[in-house]
Image (tube, rainbow, N blue to C red; front, side, top):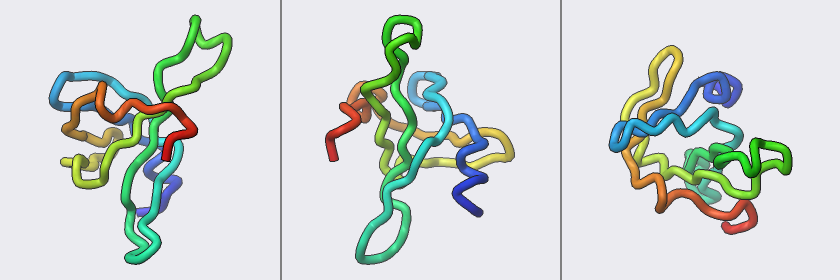
Length: 87
């Protein structure tokens, strides 16, 4: 699967049914070269006018299934929501 293919899929949290959004980026492990986390833009601020400052950083281990249209993850939505600059 290519990164472009991941970006076309919506991420849904099966723990709480939250539609998190679409994958915007991935974080790779420097040692293994594997995917460490998927990154999804966080909720929009003030109706989306001022952009997004937060993002969901979901560990690859939390990905349960990748389908044709969606990616199912199982995580605590509040715990994976971080400021965009945090790494």
